[in-house]
Picture 1 (cartoon, helix red, strand yellow):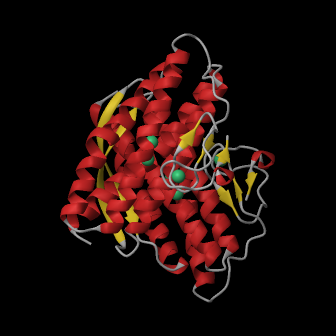
Picture 2: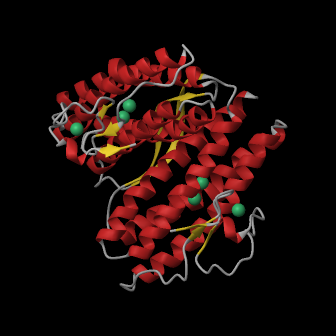
Length: 181
Length: 181
Ligand SMILES: [Fe+2]
Ligand SMILES: [Fe+2]
Ligand SMILES: [Fe+2]
Ligand SMILES: [Fe+2]
Ligand SMILES: [Fe+2]
Ligand SMILES: [Fe+2]
């Protein structure tokens, strides 16, 4: 695999791993702040980031060893409104900056598995950003997120809060396979 | 908080978050390779790294924003024996290099919470390295790890495979609080 695509996949793995962890911590804070549905959204999204991290790690399966990895990460443990803003900022960075740049390099280098892994991820991040934006609107009015369900596509990391889909609009997985939070 | 201690805590958070993720992936591989007790050890250790990551994230609670983070990470998805070697190498890097350096800086800078978070972590990493070394000895003979239990201290990330302790030798938590895998 080309060196730049390797670097980008390692950076994306590190970024997804940190997002997974950060969302678990922010989920606990949302529960403490009295927003249990926001907590469910954080936990579902945490597991979505695990799916993406696993894609990237698998694409790198044959490149064994220790590496110094540079990755972007959001920090701070504030109110749930502040934490949601941090989550929106992180997802939007991935949607508008990180993944488009990494996908362009993978295309340039003909790295098909890396390109596919990152295209799956960025499509889901866009949905994550939208759902966190909606959650913040509720929380800023002192209310918990209004969601019929919180369900995760275990294939690609798509999340629904209506449950109205028959199948995942991103990857086609059946709604019966979705995980409920 | 002093800038160098901040950088070190962010790096340690990123490293622990990646270890947490990597061990989950390697746990699934251990199950596939027919080593279910090694898989339990990987999962318990994955959750131990979540405890450490959460310490570091909490110590950084007031420093809000996005940062570029440099951290060390192991990659590669090979046989369970190879993955265990990767885990040993990562834990030993933390025990002999990363945490001693970061703790020395925290002491120099009088950063008590950071120092404590990293001292808790490094004590547990030493145990993780020992248990992974034992697991690899079994796997290299074609056998699964022989463990009476696989139990995690939910306070500090210590792991026992005998269950003979009354309390955690690192933090004093009662064995009744330990989580079984
Ligand atoms: Fe993601
Ligand atoms: Fe996301
Ligand atoms: Fe999907
Ligand atoms: Fe750790
Ligand atoms: Fe460890
Ligand atoms: Fe402990």
